[in-house]
Each structure stands twice: as structure tokens, then as C-alpha cells.
Amino acid sequence: MYESFDAFEYIDYLRRRWVFMAVACGVAILIVLPASLLLPKRYTATASIAIEPPGGADPRTSTAISPVYLESLKAYERLAESDSLFERAVERFHLRSDQSQPIESLKRGVLRVSKVRDTKILEISVTLRDPRLAQNVAQYVAEQTANLNRDENVSADSDSMAQAQKTMDEARLRLEKAQSAVTEVATREPVEALQTEVDAGADLQSRLREQLIQAQADVAEYQERATQPDAQFARDQLPAARARAATLEKQSRDVEKSVQDKSAMLARRLARRASLDADLKMARDSYDSAAARLRDLHATAGSRGERLQVIDPGIVPQRPSSPNVPLNTGVAMFLALIASLVYLSFAFVYRRRSVGYEPAVSRGMRA
Image 1 (spheres, rainbow, N blue to C red):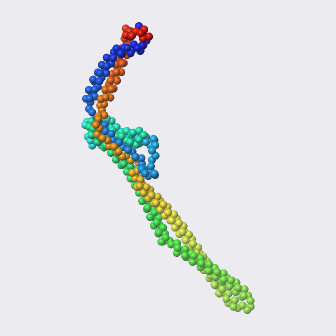
Image 2 (cartoon, helix red, strand yellow; image 1 turned 60 degrees about the vertical axis):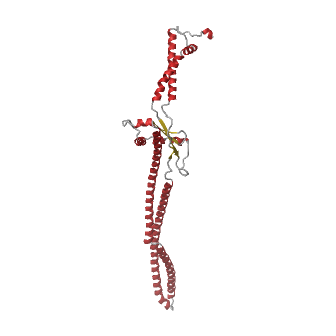
Image 3 (cartoon, one colour; image 1 turned 135 degrees about the horizontal axis):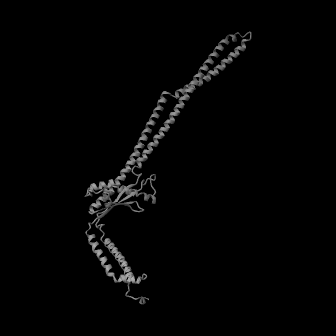
């Protein structure tokens, strides 16, 4: 008859069959140990790259080191494990014995790239049968990764500097054009001489007005005297005074019109020169800004992006990374032990159901 599970009976059952578990573990060792020793040895070499933040000592381009920034550096793993870079390494070191083997599958078994957590260190590990070749490949991949990053930074800087140079050249042309316009207008439309003429005309007009006022006063005086019987002299001088007043009035009007015309011309020239001066100032400011931008780009060239530097090319590994004989043996023993325990557990349950089981130690003695 089936009874409920009794842990003491189960432990006693296993104790009586310890030889079975020992034999299972021994068989596992006898199978795994020779197989591990016969497997080809593979060696892993690791090269390290330091990812320096952009800017260096320049506070204008410095980058704050934060956990988010450190996590963003994982993007450089893609650069180091790119297929094109690994393909060049395969061709350089003749890593592919079977030409039909895809590059992707070969890379999965050979190359491993990882950024050390919360650091700026990128590790490149290469696993091959030849330890020296593994170190050479790891160093090559690390150096090429740094070169690729430097080339990308230089390319980005070159594009920026080319655009800045183009902008400065255009600003220089506008500045030269503005300077030429100012010089041409100053030569073709002089202001100083015209200003002198306007001033001289204004002075002449002032004197003519004074003389006209005096002539008109003389005419009025002669007219008043001419009415007297003994004023023949006044009557004789009156026509001449009138003629002189008329002449002075005409000259005053002519001078006034000339001064007005020249003043209007002077105003137009001054306005045009002010406009050209404003254009020249804008062109000069634009050129100075473009030149300063280009100088800044030259000063910060190569420092706007992260800089990769190989800090450890790795060493030739002395111990194989695989097969790991102690690990394989330990895993085999553990699995054999688990398998034997599972088998004995099923056997224990089956025997209790079929014929029952009477332990060597009675329940009364246990009590």
C-alpha cells in the first residue's frame, strides 16, 4: 500500500546507493576530462582603449562626465566590431581557412568588444588558437578603431572648416566690394568740395541780402527826396538805385537757387555715403565674425569629438581560455550528480508504489 513521503526513508535510500551516484560522477569525469584535454586550445588576448571626452583643456568644448555620458560611449562598441574593420583584419592575418565561412559567423567566434561599466575603457578581445596571432589581431583592431575615430573627427572638422572658409571668402568679397563702392563714390561724388561750395554760396547769399536791403533803402530814400522841388540829385540817382536793387535781387535769387540745388545734391551724396558706410560696417563685421569662426575651428580641430587612445595593446596569453578543464569537469560532475539524484528519486517513488520500502531503521527507533 502507498504511504506518504518520508524524508528519512528517502535519505536512507540514497545513502544505500551512494555507489551509484559516485559511479555516475566518475563516468562523467572519464568522458568529459579526455574530451576537454583533446579539444584544441584557444587563447584570448585583450587590448584596451581609453575614450577621452572632447575638448581636453578647452572649457568651450569640454563635456561633463555623467552616467548618461558614460553609457552613451557604448556606441563605440559598434565602431570596433564593424564588419568592414573585421574583414580587413581577416584579410591581413589570414584568419579564414575556409573561404565559404561567412564573416559574421567567424566574427562571433573570434571577436568580442565591450565597454567596461561606468568607465571610459573599451576592451577588445580576440580568441584564436595561436596566442601571438590573437594578440596581434586584438592590437590591430584597437589601433584601427582609434584611427577610424580620428579620421571621422578630422573629416567632420574638415567639412566644418571648408564651410567656414567658404563663408569667410564670401564675406571678404562683400567687404572688398563695399570698400570699392565707398572709394568710387568718394572719388566720383566728393562731399568736401561740394560742402565748401555750399558754405561759400551761403556766405555770398548773406552778403547779397545785406547789399539788397541797403539798395532798397537807398531807393526808398531817393523816392522820398524826389518829391521835393530842389531834389534834382535824388531824381537823377533814383533810376541807378533801382537798377542796382534789381540786379542784387536777381543775383540773390540765383545764388539762393544754386545753394538750394547744391544743398540737395550734398544731402543725396551724404545719404548715399552713409548707406555705403553702413554696408561697409556690416560687411566688415560679417568678415570679422567669419574669420573668428574659422580661427576657432582651427584651434579646436580634432577636439570636438571623443578621442580614442590605445592604452594597452595586450599581451600574448600564456594560458588557454578554452577548453576550461576544471570548469568542464565540475559541470559534468554536477550534472551527473543531478541526473543520478533524479533517477534514484523516480526509482524510490516507483518502488514504494509497487512493493513498498522498509528502511533499515524502524519508525519506533526513530521516535
